Image: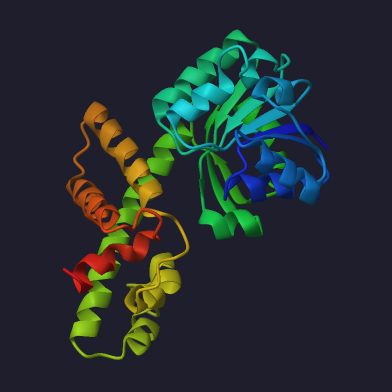
Length: 289
């Protein structure tokens, strides 16, 4: 069992840290909103401390799961950041969906402290976090990955090292690009089926047994055409992820016309008050132009 710290107890981080506690690890938590950390301790045990630096003291592994690049830097770096207190030979793991640049920055900062680093964004959403069935995409050194993978197994269905620091974030970008196109295609398909007067539930059953089958069809097809969006992965989070993808594409020369279009469609959803709607709400733009 490991001595671990978990920083960031949102809809993803809270359940993930809970799985670590359930697996028997010694868990200390930090959250910017202290009341949330205290509530987590009341539910799972362990302890909550007031700063990332205090929480990270003595930890074998420090996990981050926060909002964006700036949040990662604020929790990991600086006088009150986790790295300032981490012991030599420990490993910092960042589960935030962030840029590959900040992953490389943390890897370099960690090396200067004698601390390993693994960027490890996840896929599977809130349900995957709650059920301990996340897919974890990792970048870093083999030695550091080998040290943390058995601990990550507490909430992962798959955990894979894909290359040096930043590779996990780049792979998560691939994941989000694929999802963006699939969701827009599914939205158009459900809209078309409804306008054509078909029994949409029956259509979903039929095409779900053929080449159109996907996780999105299975899990979002029916709720999409019924106009149910008050759950799942929020539009504002997907826009953040797509901005990261589009920025990386400007550096590497990749052409992403569909991603750019879907990003603008999500901007329209947000303008309609849908920032917290599920990403399947793209269909709302078609059904209610």
